[in-house]
Length: 328
Ligand SMILES: NC(=O)c1ccc[n+]([C@@H]2O[C@H](COP(=O)([O-])OP(=O)(O)OC[C@H]3O[C@@H](n4cnc5c(N)ncnc54)[C@H](OP(=O)(O)O)[C@@H]3O)[C@@H](O)[C@H]2O)c1
Image (cartoon, rainbow, N blue to C red; front, side, top):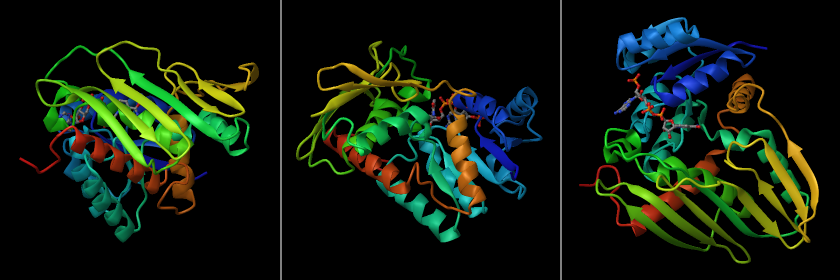
């Protein structure tokens, strides 16, 4: 197996978790880390054993030994960080949500295509074995025709204006941070083009959505989604069809257990697949697979899926009267 030289941009919370996963994944070399502050980059490199530490993202992208950059910065930076990497000939795995809007995302995808470089949103849920198992159950008709889907991602986060989650200038808010998971989930199981959207959001005093609810109506099915920072909740997900149901355990997007029930709610099959490292290894392996085969797009996290979700998020923000990047 070819060794892949990984670089990370941004040294915050998820960068630490991802570095742990890189450390435990075969074929990944912890090669370079870039921070806006050299001392932070150096401390991160020392903690995880990266070979290079750069005190700016601009410096990092000039290192031609890098095979792929993992962008772990706030949503508001994904566009410029991705463009910086692509312009310097580097492949990209970009954290969710990949952009602030569909128009930003489309420019990023066009640039990647133009340069012939790999780009994938780090939608790790779509690479996880129990997720793929559930998709397979649906594809093979185990629950019949899916008709109803419920997925939530609510958790209680103390309001802190300095945290990117609550900062409009960082692309904060529940929609881009949390709803992206249940929306991706709904579109995967029910289809990429709902015919109608109904939505409500609780917008906080600083202008980001603190909680939201989204109903997606399809011709013969609907999805009921909620996400937010205001209540602790059990975040299971359910997909029901005329022949049975599939239930994802709590924290559905990263759980290790999914169950199949018949139409009388009898348990038919349960799939339990523990993480091998910390859960991010599956998306790392998918990036390795794509790079090894010279692919510029992942079949597990295709650009069309990232676009379809972003389109719905644009629509929700329009309905809520929220501003888009560049709007005053
Ligand atoms: N996949 C997952 O499970 C998961 C979980 C959490 C978050 N995420 C995603 O990962 C991204 C980062 O989230 P996080 O929770 O790790 O954020 P965070 O803790 O705030 O870290 C973000 C890092 O980005 C860099 N940065 C660049 N510009 C910045 C700015 N204007 N303000 C603040 N930081 C800036 C900073 O690193 P330097 O100072 O070193 O440059 C900072 O440490 C988000 O897109 C989020 O949605 C994904």
